Length: 319
Ligand code: R5P
Image (spheres, rainbow, N blue to C red):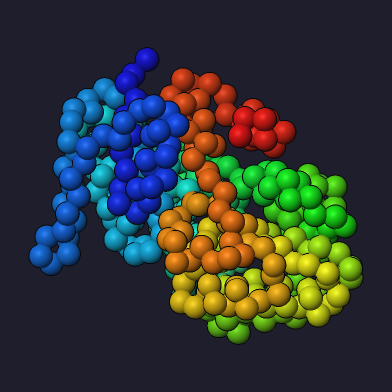
């Protein structure tokens, strides 16, 4: 079997360190710096020829710098004859632009897929893509993991009664339905409209939330507008409590204040992106992805099936 090496970009070093600890594999030294004009310089600190490499980089802000840094790391590895270059991108940027909505718009999710593939990656491992069909934009294997089993486990632990799972928009219904299935709970759906980017308004609520604990599940919290509006509307419709689950806590602008002052009493987040101390407000609980990502890397390296890990009941046993 080829040797395994883990390399971290600068986007989410803490997660990479935790994965390295779980796997008992040290992070390969890498030098990453900027030239005076901002161009990125990368040098891998040891031999990689013939080895299986796992790059850990979350494509969070500064998005363009982190994306470019990752592409340059791939290029350095390819030119140094690494055997297989596997990308662990728990959060994949530009995924929200996955289709043209009006004329003369780009499809950036496809552009990013082309950049990653062309740079020389052999595999992409990611979590909660904005839409599942983004997998098809790639001509390399994509292992797409989901966060809802981790949320289900935590919700069961917290012993909420009389719950209803809520999708905060039509696009998230499938995800919410899966969580509802796991929890044996009914589903409600919010019909969200956007007048412009990062500005959400609730149009309608389908389903009954009265006197129930409403569990909202979303892939991304960016400015917090969608989630805060959803939580407040659920309260207005008579929910007795509102709990939020979200995979990618981008928490831009005043998202934290919005969430703290919203009707949500608890906010469960995965650490697909760094969540600094000042953003871990009293309502927030962070669930680590490191054990799951460590298992995935180990199985890929051993060329074992990942199918078992996709099954939530196995995930909850493993984690
Ligand atoms: C949109 O479709 C996503 O699933 C999220 O709901 C959205 O990106 C959240 O953005 P914000 O927090 O700015 O409302």
